Length: 278
Image 1: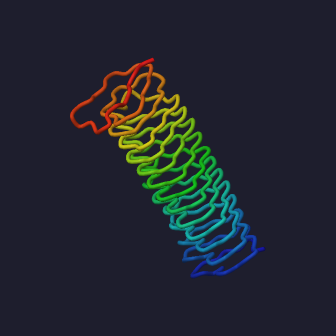
Image 2: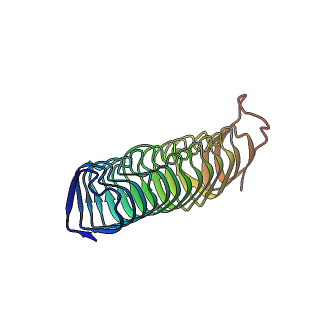
Image 3: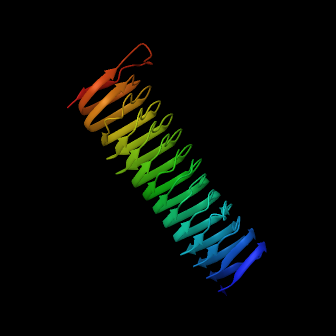
């Protein structure tokens, strides 16, 4: 047990193991807790840079990471974080088996890069760009995000109950399914493969173009969603109105009503998509 203490400088708690830290402050300096294993960290305060690198097996609860704790958690495996607030950017990179619950990240810039085995429950992301780049095996239940360019180059992603306000989300992803969520932003899902949306509401211009294996079940679109499905393989069942469809490659689209369909000389073969209203 290390309790009610303060540490600063270079690597003050290097290589500690089988330890509980309670009400500990890591002040200015670098790499406060490095190359460690089997830690419990509760009600701790992180100020300096890179405080948790190469940590295997940890539980972090009720803790606060200041703006200066940038790039705080990299190369760490089997970590669980609950009820924490993060104000620093560039968290969580090159990791295996990371679980977050009830966590707020107020600068999500370049957060969650190359994490494999990521579970997110009731997490809020604010600001920043490119969270979730290159992640694999991701499960989300409860996410609110206004960060830009979320979920790019990801594989094997399952999302429930998310509210995402962004642009260029889910680009060049493979094997993604999204349930009961709201995604508002331009250019959703471009160049992705095996993207499935179930009971989702979509906003923003030109969604879901250049997609292979796109499936939509009982979804809705905002009026601003135009020129959708260009060069996509799509099977979609839509409630309400689709404003405009442009040059889908193949598949079947059915909606309650369709404002317009643009088919021109740029459509790619087989150019046999069936488009109809109920």
